[in-house]
Picture 1 (spheres, rainbow, N blue to C red):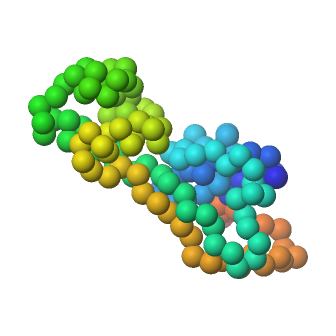
Picture 2: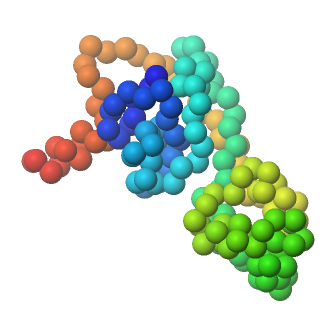
Length: 150
């Protein structure tokens, strides 16, 4: 179980999301406020023991839609032609270029290989120390509530 960084409630599953440029762990309800990058299947397995590094994780770059469109147009392909060459559906290419969906790692790798560019980046966090405190956790949602009332 883990706490949502926005609402503070406990959930068994959280999502790693990019909200206003920040990487946060959020519940499904709060994930609508940003771009979901991946689902955290087991919160306890994501956090390692004190002072251990997080595992390297792969994410799709933020401006993937613009990069793919630019590269496709650079070589003069239409969306349906690109879809055929990648053995994917045209609707998938449309949704990716319109940023309605995030391409899977498999599709991203196909696009990287086809265009000869990078869409996937590795992220790793520096070593962190988790300290327990007596205070209740302060969430982004608490800040929003204080701004509204104050």
